[in-house]
Length: 373
Image 1 (cartoon, rainbow, N blue to C red):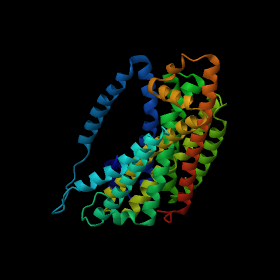
Image 2: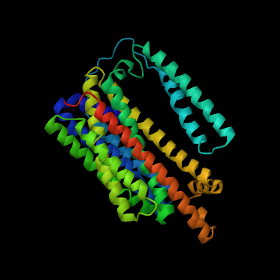
Image 3: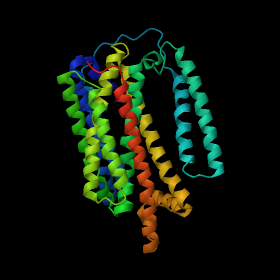
Image 4: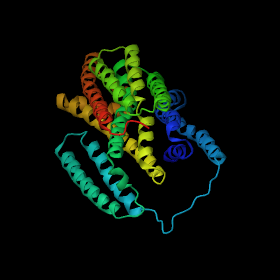
């Protein structure tokens, strides 16, 4: 993903980049949302192992397309060495945070102590990473680039965007299966509005950036719209039928499609030709970190609220996550209805948190100084 973004930055003039970055953003984000659609269908009809077979033809097609790229001479820098220690320290920053968030899903004293220790370890690793990267000629993280206000704020915007989008894609199918009794394939197909919305929003935004030269204006207003739709959905989610759910998620996704192409164009403009690849990679790293943190926090909120209200409901939801809705088959009708109501309230709080993610993204979009190309 980083290479494809950097290649567009190399061969396309600055004013035209928005157009092509919009296509790439549409492909990347829409494919992330389409995956559960295909996965749900394959799981239901051919078994869960079949989903791994999808990678074979796609991988072969990608290899074929890679060899069709025109080769260009590259002047390798003398004395360049891969920043292995920087990679190890980066892993030491990210992985403990994700493990700590997983422990927080079970609010017991031992888990809380373990989570606290992991957070401390991650903080110490962050200090070590920043100190190490600042003294490297070929650092894994471009510290000098990340110090620019436009760049670090753009990447933080992508963190919140990735957290909002991926947590929705990860948990909406489970919510629909438990709350509405949808099958695996039906839950997947109900993600299509997200796929269509993200793709249409990305392509439209890319075209408008090329036409107008404006960049951050689109996510500035788009994320406000996404927040409004998400908060409406969050508040009404326990009682919404499937059609209003699809409409609200599609509208929110259309608004969220205004982000990725704009951020890539903005960061690449700030990075310049020498740091083009580093800038593109930083955006992808931020998106991945946001996706991981968003899904982890979503799970923490749902589990925490269920355990707070009813520890038995929290334990039951853990079995639902592991075994699917079949874990509810042994419950009486009244117990099942009570659990579904408690779960609806917990998901409402988590969906509100997703709205908070997009709100933070909107604040950042309005604050980034570079707004035209």
